[in-house]
Amino acid sequence: MATIEFEIKEALGELSRNEKGWTKEVNRVSWNGREPKIDIRSWDPTHEKMGKGITLTEEEWTELQAILTQLNVED
Image (cartoon, rainbow, N blue to C red; front, side):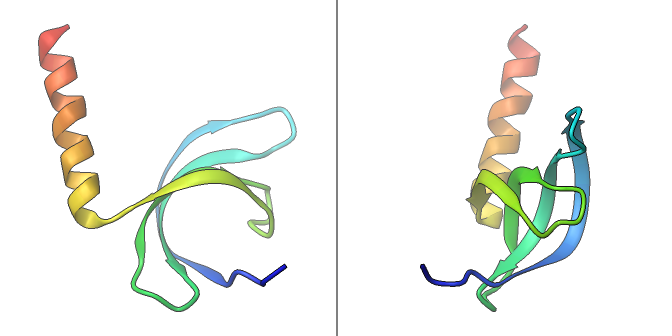
C-alpha cells in the first residue's frame, strides 16, 4: 500500500469528540505535498491515524457554505 503524506496546515475547528478521544475536525490539509484543501474527517488524539473523510477545494467549500446558509434560511 502506498504511503500517504499529509500535513495539517491550519486547524479550522472541532465538530465532535468520541469516548476514545478521536475528534471529527475541519482542517486545511496538504496531501502528498499538494496545495492545501479543506478537509473534514476523524483523527486519533495524536493525529497519526485518520478515518475516512471528505476533501473540498475552496470553490466546493464556498458552495457548501452557500447551501448550508440557504437551508438555515428555509427552516
